[in-house]
Length: 264
Ligand SMILES: Nc1ncnc2c1ncn2[C@@H]1O[C@H](COP(=O)(O)OP(=O)(O)OP(=O)(O)O)[C@@H](O)[C@H]1O
Ligand SMILES: [Mg+2]
Picture (spheres, helix red, strand yellow):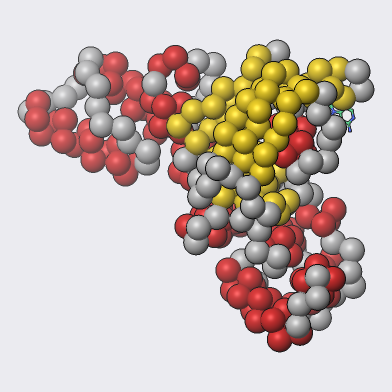
């Protein structure tokens, strides 16, 4: 088990933010945490890093955690990209050769060119900074990545680049717990979802159950492909195979049209 959150209660400034909350984050899964502003998402992530006192309960973590801040600038304090990447491994006594090999490996994963190594971290573009911040976290080979809105502020291309990098890293045998406000990304990338709200206990479920099972999906603005899927199901008055992408949805509708002959 990656992280086991057992019956925790957290108070901040005399206000209960999480009450009697239990959640399980499995190894090698991508769990998305969603919910309204102020629901306690960042608080939960901070608690999982053992940064907050618990009023009650316990959090058990199996494996090293890396933390990706929402704002990349919060992560940098060195004068060059190379020093930034070397800082933690150097502190933990890695050899120069091992550090250099890891820098090469991590830069390849996050799609940054080694020519940026002498640059000031602050000279990079927003998208590059976000990927450098991820690279600095991955240098220490964490088993679990906690990410607070890893795509916030990125343009649509950089947004997809970031998510695909994270997916590749997950597929290499790692665990991701990431806060997001974008349900389209949850549908495309997450295995599990935790839904948080201010005055309700968090709900945890399989991503497909969230999008496709009726009780779970009240009150959310779903991605167009999912909304269309539910409309088609309603119109045909039967359950269809679940479609996670628009391409899958079109395929299912084509099959249905062929089956029924005409569909209006
Ligand atoms: N450092 C702090 N001290 C006291 N209260 C805090 C602190 N940080 C957050 N809170 C309070 O905890 C509650 C939950 O905040 P949190 O930042 O966890 O929400 P969130 O779900 O991450 O929201 P957002 O989507 O806006 O990032 C809020 O009421 C907030 O005011
Ligand atoms: Mg937050």
